[in-house]
Image 1 (cartoon, rainbow, N blue to C red):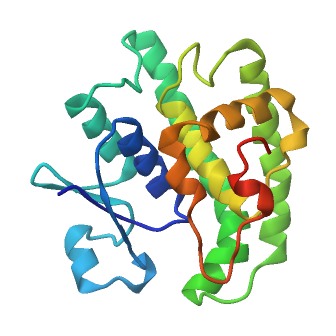
Image 2 (image 1 turned 45 degrees about the vertical axis):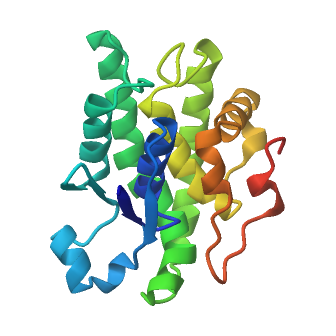
Amino acid sequence: MTVLYHHPLCPFSRKVRLTLSEKRLDTDLQEEKFWEKSPDHLARNLVGRVPVLKIDGLVLSESNAICEYLEEVYPTPALMPGDPRERVEVRRLVGIFDDSFYHEVSVKILGERVMKKITGAGQPDSRNVKDGMMRIKFYLDYMGELLDRRRWLAGDVMTAADFAAAAQLSVLDYTSDVDWNRSAVLKDWYAKIKSRPAYRPLLRDMVAGFPPPLHYSDLDF
C-alpha cells in the first residue's frame, strides 16, 4: 500500500497529496506530528520532516524528489512539459514557491500564528506576521502578472508549478490570510484549482483548535 506521512498544514505535504491524487494513486494518509521527531519517523527521514512517501517498496522524502519520482514512474497525467524550455520555467516557479514564498510568507504567517501554538514553540512574533503579510502582496501581484498572459502559471497547461503555488496558498487560505480580491485572474486560477477532484480532499482538512473560514471549502468563493 502507498502511504504518505504528512501534516494537514504542511504545504509540501499538500503538494505531494495533489500530485498523488491527480495521478489517481490510492494513498493511505498518516498524519505525523513531525516536530516530536519520533524514532519511527526519524527512521523514515533522518531530518524529521514531512512529507515521507512509502511507495513501490521505497521510502521517499523531500517533496521535490517525491514529485520527480512520481512524474517519471507515473507519467499520466503529465505535470511536467515535454519541452526542456518549458520544463525549466516550471522548475523555476516551483523553486520560487517552495523556497522564497515559503520562507518569506508561509513561515512568517502560518508558522507564527498556527504552527507555534500547535508545536508549543512559544508565542507568535507580530513583526514576522506583519512582514509576511507585506511580502505576500508582492507574490500575489507577480502571480497576477503571469496569469494575465498565461492560462496557468507556467504556460497554457496546468503543471507542477500550479500545485506548488496552490499548496502554499491553500494553507494560508485555511487561516484566511489571502486577499483574493487583490487580483481577479488569480482568484479565477485558484477557483479552477479548487474545482479539480484532486483538490477536494484538502478542502476537508480540519486542524483541532483552528477551524477554517467559511469560504475555504466553497468552490464559488
